[in-house]
Image (cartoon, rainbow, N blue to C red):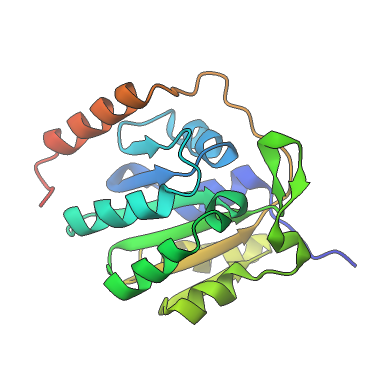
Length: 196
């Protein structure tokens, strides 16, 4: 019997809630599409493209540089599996303002749906706990999303694994120009007087 999985859009919307106060870093592919659809590519979103495995590392750097802001990394299981060492580095650095949300669908969605290691039993929540995340949870049911959303803003580092349905979530107008994304995000940081 297969385990229940969440609709991607619902999981992202419920976990991020009113996202305008967050600094969001996305992994590439469907995670970037999901967040772009929710935020309308808001200036507070740094969407990775072409740097598979780098989202958690970028989010960690941002959290350390901006300790007064909540940083949320939204990435997929395939992207996260490319650099599990980044989770260990987060656990060692222990930024209280960083949350990693992994949208785990068990496949590499944009390259043909090949199964990832999580489809064979690799438990990313257990990995996060093993490297030292003080808070790590897995959500599978809609009823679990409210409690997980509260953890997204709790002192961390926090790891939330959302088991989501496979399937691509295209966003036709996603800005994939790295220079444009960097400059827009940097302007948003500079314009916010609450930043430390």
